[in-house]
Length: 68
Image 1 (cartoon, rainbow, N blue to C red):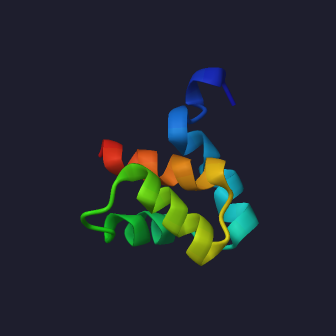
Image 2 (tube, rainbow, N blue to C red):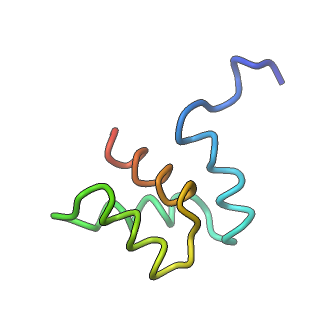
């Protein structure tokens, strides 16, 4: 696989998130997409406390959702 084909930014975490937490990335994107009225770090804290997600993984998901 060529370097330019690899995901960049928050999406580069997606394969490891799926492997570690056993759910497709669409699941996490949908959950975070439904968190209306919360700030970035509030969403990160929610993923960490409610789903046991690590900070880097939670931050990547939230950053990706908010950038769309």
